[in-house]
Amino acid sequence: MAHEQQEQHEQQRPEQTVRAYRTEELAEAAGIPVRTLRFYRERKLLPPPRREGRIAWYDDHHLARLRTIAALLERGHTLGGIAELTAAFENGRDVGQLSELLGMGWSEETPVRLTPEALADYFEGEVTPENLAASLALGYVATDGDEIVHVSRRLLDASSALVREGVPLAAVLETGRQVRAHTDAMAKLFAELVATHLDDREAALARLRPLAKSVVEAELTMAMDRLLAGAEPDPDDQPRS
Image (tube, rainbow, N blue to C red; front, side, top):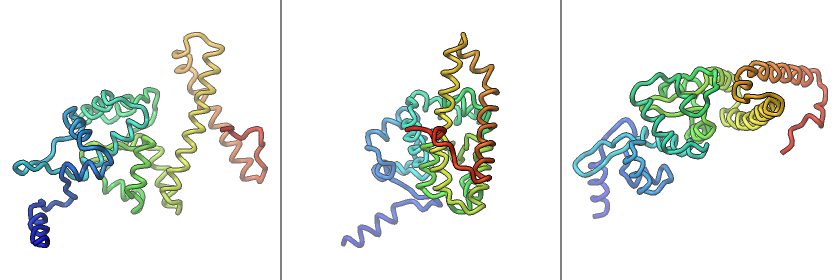
């Protein structure tokens, strides 16, 4: 009897090229309560499901959207800001506005829109759920319907080049996380320098930003030169936690 019920259940599940989820199944896969999923749907953060009678069917694109929402919330974005980002995508606004919507108004990076298949080609089969979740948490990628948006062409190209050289994508992402911590600290140092000695902090930061980039690029170049020459790093130069 139980076997027959299982067969009937499987027959009721629609055949799709992507996995189908009922409401409870999607919430469980995303690690959120059902009431949260319904709240996101009411706020139009989640595309409507496909319905068959009274049954709502979701798919992997809905799951990816929920993971994007979770990653953005973890980075400190509000639901209102996430809703604005979602609306921008769904209304067809230029993906170049992604950085601004994510609170990265200074960004000079060029976002890249990719299909899941194209992203997989970039990383030669290493686009696992774990690596995708790490990328979302870092803010490297976001989902837009059936597509994925990477926030930086340069980071995408550098990451894929490292993977082609044989570095696991998980290691690349972990290194990216550590680099993010160091660059955040450097940006804070430069901002404090400007705030201490110059008036109109915002205007000064915008005007002098190229100088900060030049300093970082020069110091990194010299650090790599010292490393390749076999010189021991100066302990006083090591970042302190």
